Length: 603
Ligand code: AMP
Image 1: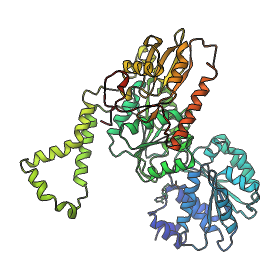
Image 2 (image 1 turned 60 degrees about the vertical axis):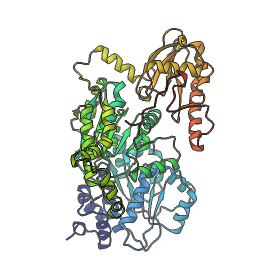
Image 3 (image 1 turned 180 degrees about the vertical axis):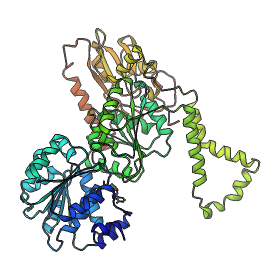
């Protein structure tokens, strides 16, 4: 007998979930479904994302509600629009063979009138994000007086996002005798307080150990110098040819810069951050879901609620500020019983943070070595061989060309032909990785000098400028194939200032700090007002503490703001196609030095 039938789920639903590939209940489903089917208890379930929570509450809901009635009987609150749509879609799929089930997804950033229309038509299950739900309640557009079940999904995330008061207000609209089912990945005291305030003797269930990450996730770290981070990251990606990953950065700017650098280097990547419009966000997510993107570069907030299966790697390009966020990040992989890797690129100073995370997830990290160039090449070679072996051949189409192909290759032996086909792709890797240095740092050997350099690499602004100079940031660096001399020329040429006005140049992977004499700073801002490099807007900012006279925080009548408005201008440009640019540098950017040099594509 089907194990879901044994648990008490009706045939229609079992048929629908069998079509979805559910053969047996996941651990949380096995334990939660019998409790929730009684409909008698409040419930607290501690479980990570990806464990099958949606069906754990969704299947019992479908058994409990009366679908001959068309008024709201269940309310599911969740933190993000993504998750809201996902839950609503999942519930509809489970209910595919039950008549008259109406589910509405209610979330911000979308047309409210469509949602109101659906509510007016009659729904039994409302899946909502708190802000929009409250808006609809305040419009008196929904009647929750017959709600029997409230589900709080990813409760810790909702509280993290500041929805506490909204949740209180929404819950006060529902009857006292409703049952509340709360799911959370972690149990901070705020969540515990909700359980105490709104529930009576809840049935508590923990899947896995409290606060413990998914056992199917391997946690790894790579110890590297800050300035080698991007190069190390690329090696790791290259040595995993089938990677399908989410790359977490700490800030919007870092997210953009890394995604832009990856795109420029020929990877299928894009960024997801708070400044994107909902439409842009949906587009990126669609491409990622459909696997047209291999790497999604995201901030923590933007990636909340992302529910994509088969993510192979979560890459912590920068560790999260709050160590607790690590669990949320890594939970994006190893979903639905699959395995996955969560890897972190760190410098020696961040080892302490890794140890703190180990305590939280209850699992040790494995120290990994950044692969050497030759190892990457070997991995790629065998990936190519595999690809050749497994490629689908369209006999009908290619047969007509076979005689000509055979003829032109007839002077080659079988072995030669194999070598040549494999070399087609392989040569690019060999070229790129020849003479590639070892990027690993040994924590014990990393002395004071090393650490000093690392500090500088990590510090985006804290360092003060030399006397009479201002320290500026530019979003171009070593990955753009600039040497220090190139950078000096690029700055002087655009800002129209002499070389002696530029002080120290501190070149990093995707950005550079440089000093400019105070009286020439305005010229730099003016000169770079509308310059782009390989289609990427060149951005200049004053690094924090970058003025030599550190007492003055702002400079030149609010230039930091100017930097910011330039930023939003860039976003506007992007949306409108970005036509009115000033100078545009591309592959042959060396027009300032007279030299021509091809900008690097991927290899
Ligand atoms: P969730 O934690 O609800 O987001 O579920 C994570 C993923 O696991 C979703 O893609 C579900 O479709 C899938 N899933 C949930 N329960 C099962 C099950 N019993 N068997 C197979 N896949 C499942």
